[in-house]
Image: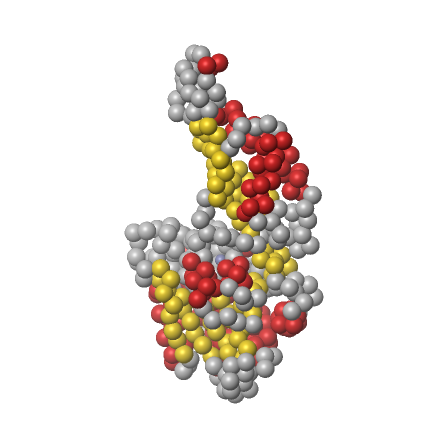
Length: 384
Ligand SMILES: [Zn+2]
């Protein structure tokens, strides 16, 4: 009897399958689980592959036990240009079964398959292919950077942006469905606190309710302020947004609340800064004569919006390689922003759909995975 036909897996699919089978959950989510957390297993695996191919491997310390992986394909001549391929190696938590990759109906299922080991596999495979090619660029250095900690604080890209070498272009890998993303929103986490005066619940007129003040502020932020934000418009990103994610206040049912706080997620567009956002919220509260409120940024790391000029020749070249006429914008924050802050023009690109990222059944379309390799190779081969 002949066995059932099994579709032959391409080498990039096999690479992705191996990467998904190496759990690399960000330790910030599972602090005491070394078997399934940390980027080191994935980094070691890729480093071994790179060394076998004669590529230069180095590491960049980021956090205790966590290092970015740098793999360099040097040009035959002097370095005149540098292209950085920078996907992240960490993933979000998942059920155990998601660490066993499954190839079915043209898809590869498993944690990280689209966010963002699909990009890791596509970029790394393109790099290995190019290293075997005699006609590779002779002035352009290709630097693959496997970043740590994207899913928590983006510490990998922050350290790389600050201390790593600059490049002519960095491509952060994220599931953009092969769209070329040149702009994304920034992110501010704000904590607002109101103070009242405590009193017995039987005599509320003797106190001042911090909850009442905060209720009015929350209402204002979600009505008038939202309308104000809708009047701002960015060509690729639309308007900025606000979400009140947490409210906490009061201590007892029979006590007039002395304190109330809210935590706010404000997504910014280019041109908006932490200072401008704080100032406009203070102005709005003042206009409505709301009690003075402390507002503090609670994230502790800057998450600026990304806006890379799509008219840069290198971006035009990438758009052409990706067969896209126009660049795209996305709402979510990525490693491209900290890298761009370091002075390297950055874009976001990769196979898969963000809708499947972090989901209980994460998968990537294998045709898109192959196409991501083709686009990357087409672009790299065009380099001087
Ligand atoms: Zn990601």
